[in-house]
Amino acid sequence: MDLEKLKTAASTLPPNIQFKTYTCESDLLPAIKLIERDLSEPYSIYTYRYFVQQWPRLCILAHDQTEDECVGVIICKLEPHRRGYNEGYFDTEEFLNRGYIGMVAVGKPYRQMGIGSALVARALCAMKEEGAQEVALEAETVNLGALALYEGLGFVRDKRLYRYYLGGTDAYRLKMYL
Image (cartoon, rainbow, N blue to C red; front, side):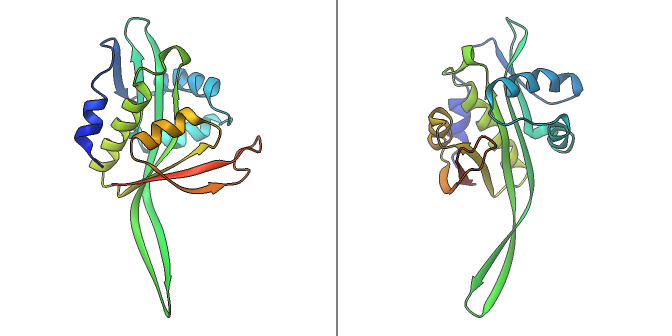
């Protein structure tokens, strides 16, 4: 992953868009509204708190200073992930630090401005700084905008997950090795 390329891409945003990491509960409510409006899956408040209380540095909000509103959010985590291999007679286990992008949302009037790419780039840089070796996420197979964004940043499709979402739609698991 070329961190400099990601940082450069994220620097071409309108000057009124500012980024900040999660600091307190008041940051969460506008993010939840944005996610509920744009994502297909419902999440409970406990799911959001699971992420933001353990990995606040990996939960980033984009804020329009002019309109004084949250216009984008990314919520991530980073944990050790066990990877097992069966190599003939010998079974081996390896642990690696896997980042996970749980939710990304950008308000419709703010799409196609680079905010989504900037949020993902900032999260990837933060995960890399914290020792992530790979990052995974799921995206609906019909969400062509999200797939283009992630693949444009260097994610590759790892596998198709049939009927992954509650509505019965399929997902792709995408990965990026850092």
